[in-house]
Length: 362
Picture 1 (cartoon, rainbow, N blue to C red):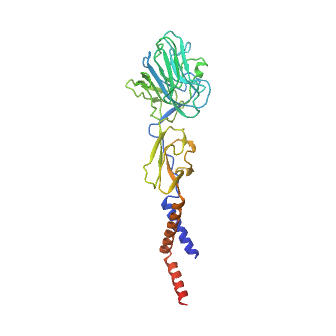
Picture 2: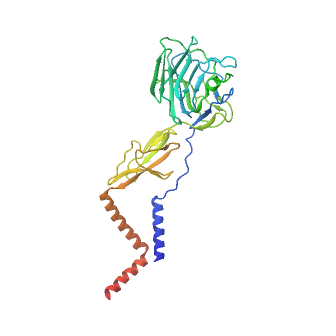
Picture 3: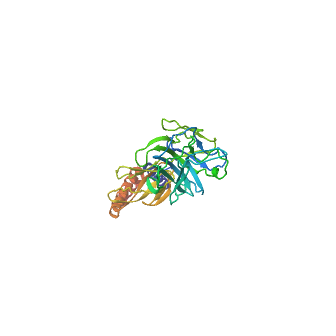
């Protein structure tokens, strides 16, 4: 009898493994090819913790500056993309700068009369999440957008071009040569991806003048994606640091065995997941009760908030049989189990049948 139990246990275990009910968590997939960003720590030393070019486009008005920013929570005035008007040890002067002030998006520039024009939004970005911050200047009006949504407009009341810049694009800080501790404390704290300077006013069509996707993932230089080839040079081998970029990653929801087509949504890395999102699947006789993330073996209810997305994931639907379907399913499972038992334990079944026949004859 014990031997029979061991055989049954082995058969059941094999069936469970074959059905996929016991899953081994796969290794986390690598970042998508080219999905890199640069992490800045706000180093205050001269020529530190930045990307710099040796030339830059000429800007006057009707231009757009944008970048994907992931703030680490450090307070202060933190420039992400800039083009100084003057930058040296004795005299540094702003040209234009896009960044965060205590986490709040700002755009600052010095006009052709050398008067500062500064626009600051009202709401700080969430710490540790990616946002696209975009600023436009038409010579009189500045606008700031966050993830495509207009958050502030400032009309300065008079037209003035941008003051000439000194021919350098800086990523990660506002000045590179200044010895003023206050000015060199303006370095960005967090991650930057896809900084771009364009002609035209977002959301209209733009013509990129300098653009960096940081697809290299290593090394001391990063290519400008435009024909202008304003190559950026990193300040050292350790700062800024190459990290995962802001490019969207795929979250796929499958509904097997309902037969419905899987649904894939794209989210940015470090974005909190709402499991299932707006996806709906239907299966006759069953109710969708949650999602299983095979990589972590976690089952959650639809609409639950989860961990932040870091890599592509697949979530499989979890189904609960409705009352009537459950009865039929249980009966079917019972018949199937008896059939397996008879097929596998043929010897034992034959003995039982023989015993019953002897009992009847007696």
